[in-house]
Image (cartoon, rainbow, N blue to C red; front, side, top):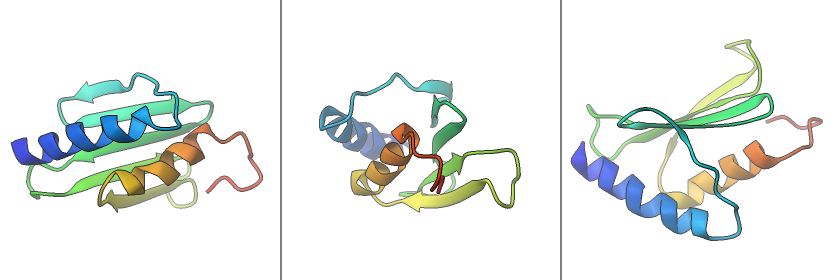
Length: 95
């Protein structure tokens, strides 16, 4: 768990320093970060039971089958598209 938190806490600040104006996350637990922008949200979770695993939940509506996406982040490079999507104002391509 400590290794996961360390990896995330060192990777994300490096990413957020580049090209994106960082917003402060809404922190609901020690291992969960969540950001909202309009009707969209991105939640990043460090899994205590799975070393090295960092998951995400992308939400743009209320339907669990059609308005949400779950996945795994393998580094800051995977966070970039999520942040771009969160900040996007183009609702024609919500995913």
